Image: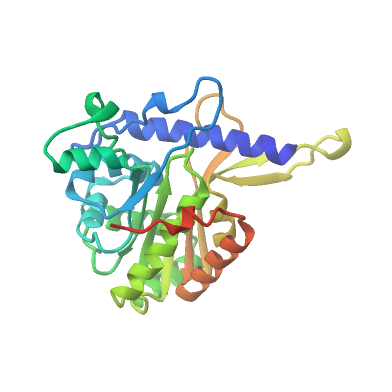
Amino acid sequence: MAEQRGKEKARKREEQMDEDSTSSEDEDGAGPAEMDEDEDDEDGEELDISFDSIAVSKDDFRRLTPLLGKLYQGIPTHVGSLADVIIEQPNIGGVVKIAVPEDFEKSEKNGKKGGEEADEEIDETVYAVTTVVNMTQHERVEAIKGLKDYIFQNANQDMKKKIQALFDSKKIGLVISERFVNIPVQIAVASLTALKEDLALAKLDEAYDHLLIISLGVTMSAPGVGGKKKHKGMEEKVYFKPEDEIFEKYAEVTVRSSMPSLSGEDGQPFRNFLFIPYNRFWEAFQELKTQLSFNADVTSLTYA
């Protein structure tokens, strides 16, 4: 029960972060990308929504920044420059959007709209994004430089030496695997599966020695057992994305940093930077797939 309460509070924290990232505009001109409230069923019933995994396009700039802004919250840089890099490599990973109805696509090809979709616009919201960015190739990009500086600022002296050695190898890839809070982890599994295939197809599966992941969560005071008072130092970490807990076990170097708490919030939000050896990353991914009893249909998503 305590773990469930912790996860519920973490979920609410991430929902608040989603709202924060969509309600503010960054200086690159990226505005809010809000989720359609009509998708929430008033009776609490689950809606059957189909998603498509497609290549990112230049039109997705404003839709990417809310997701990237959540990862970069509190880091003094502009995520618009990172969005530009992601758009420049449409063959590596992609974005997840609500699938376009087949009859709408047919009517569009015929130059007219038909059916119930005639009075509706297609939802172009980016609900998830997955890719890898070469941190050496793009080291002068503001978002990459700002991220690197922030990591060093939060590392102790011994950790800085290890991190510098990793960057000196010039083979670090920044993994972006982000989604809205109500998007299931199965979508991430499908997207990462496609990403691995993309890297192999582009002959980039040997381009990296380490992959860097940014994980978010909240540290909460664990309640006492059997009604006993909790002891000082009894804490539990709850991750916003369940896969991050698995990835952290495989990290060679972990840099931890705190994040500002929201007013009236329990627990302390945290952000971890995980440097994972390339092959170990995919071992962690395999563990994730083993732990999940996911629907095979979900993992069959492919990038168009």
